[in-house]
Length: 442
Image (tube, rainbow, N blue to C red):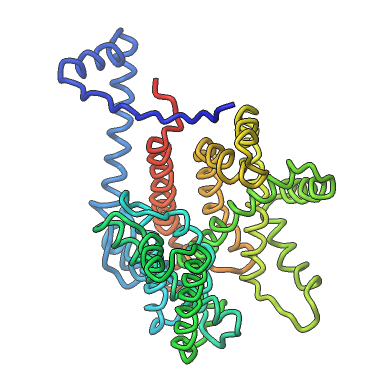
């Protein structure tokens, strides 16, 4: 049976003319006296709401003040944004040493450079770009943020990251200007020495190993000042926890979903039990259990700090929820796709990797992004166990002596930040749906 794939090019609706807009308004908003009255009343409510927000948040607001009392002296009815401005560094970076903030900025810049080719149409090998980001960037960024001594394994992963990042940038430039990938260029280079594919693979492997060895030697003397995890906080901590959780929850969910659908009883029972245990308790319970129970299962002398325990708990919790999303997507694929893949001679992993999983993931984009957004918002729960994430820092403003009692403005500012991030993720998911034609246009 043939494997059927659908590639629908979404059609963009024609722009509405002035007459059609007026006709739509007349039909939808002013079709009767009741609808007209309801429309006018709703517009009035919107008007007075926006007017109140403008007066409170802009016209009467205080942007410059030394304390909350000075804000009241300027205006009794306006917002006191001066406290937010005074705490901006803490809101974004927590208590991270101010002379070391460049490390956080550099880590964010490296991530943007690493991920930029994912949004460029001409760049090839995007799957490998995503794999290198998940596999190597956390180690490079983790040491950049934490500093301190490096073990042998950390040095190897950092060296691999220092090779992967330039290779990714070279691959991006080749895609933009020559419309080819770095892999094609290396294959052409190795083909000049021998036409034997085995020899070409060995040459390519030797080139990769040599690059990692050179990077290992170059980074061997690199050592940054250690920064305790207790000084991490603010938006930086929120994005660190959410970023690692997002990066590992999807592959972890895929593994658990495949394990739950496995024909091997032991794997199926273990996967099902693991998923049901984590999905049956709230995240706050998992966080408390992680900070109290993880040390009991560790070997004697092996200590995990609270931040590491929280990250592990968030990854496991969200991987279980993602597993059910992935399982639902796999069940939506017709059996004919499996039969067609077997007809082509593909085994289990070939069928899943090349036929089933790409189709299932495209249909699961809304649910996957919904889980990611939920994960980002759930990170605020870590403030309950003593970590000063974005919400924890915003709440700390009201306990600072100069800004004692300042509650509304910090929480509104935090809501705006979360809205911008979550709305951007939602819009990008809609873009992916349209690009991959997963939805039906009516």
